[in-house]
Amino acid sequence: MPPTTLDAVVLENLVSAAVAAPSIHNTQPWRYRLDPATATLEVRAAAGRGLRHTDPVGRALHVSVGAALFNLRVAVARTGWEPAVRLLPRPAEPDLLASVRPVAADAPDPRHRPDLYAALWRRHSSRFPFSPHRPPEWLLRELAAAARAEGASLWFPGVRDTTRMMRLTAAAERRNTETDARRAENRSWMREGAHDGLPGAALGARDATGRLPLRDFSGVGAGGTLTARFETGPTIAVLATARDRRADWLRAGQALEHVLLVATAHSVRTSLLHQALEWPDLRRSLQRVTAGPRYVQMLVRLGYGPEGPATPRRPVREVLETGL
View 1 (spheres, rainbow, N blue to C red):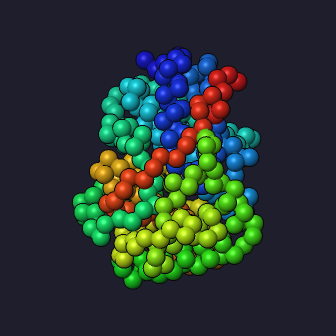
View 2: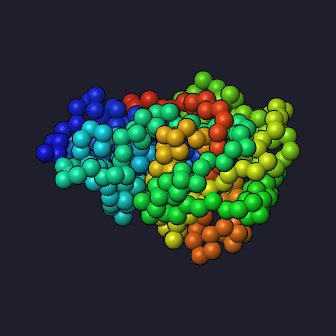
């Protein structure tokens, strides 16, 4: 039978799993509310954690919350229930992005396979050089299937299109560092000893060749003055959706996290390249290069290399309300 209540230990585990998801600038723009009458968890946007300059329409916020929603689904499935998910369930409450209710199921959903639960605790973005070895084709097909299961597409452009995408990302990165408001917003999320944001150890180095434009949080290079030689032919995956509405952004976030967890389960490291998506004209150019009629939601870099340090997370008590 579905649970009529969620005990404190199970509830804390579910929310801890959700907040382990990646978010833009590690802003963690989410909060959770339990309806004890129905054992339903509401997933809400923490609007005060949005990026006013980098993400003015909230697309990246929705993608971030979608990633947390996928983690929550995986954690619910591990309890033996299945997550019944509704996206944007009450239009009159625009901050309510999803609800998740544990229900009984005839058979487990294959999207919530057990190895993904272990992977969600080990997944970290890695802003470090990867080896030149490309993940095998069978794994790339598995990653594409993971995105497809969530209503999105994932594919891997060739060398020529990858080079063009990196040029667009570099152009966006230059704009970000040359725009005072965006540069200040980036720097404001460089934080030491906090429960959110990015400590210096997570930033890594910048590419000595300039071919791989990682985000510059400091204003003087992705890792300050530290440089390293990155892979010359990065493996880039393009995540896209057929439409570009709020529900599609949430689906994109779920697809993104599904892809990241499958990659982690196979010891493949990942990092995200989002800069070109933050400028409407560059996003359109990126779409012409990569997606045709579909809307690009994220570029994912994949490879083999250092795991990357964990970034901090807000404690459950700061993000969870247990009554309505």
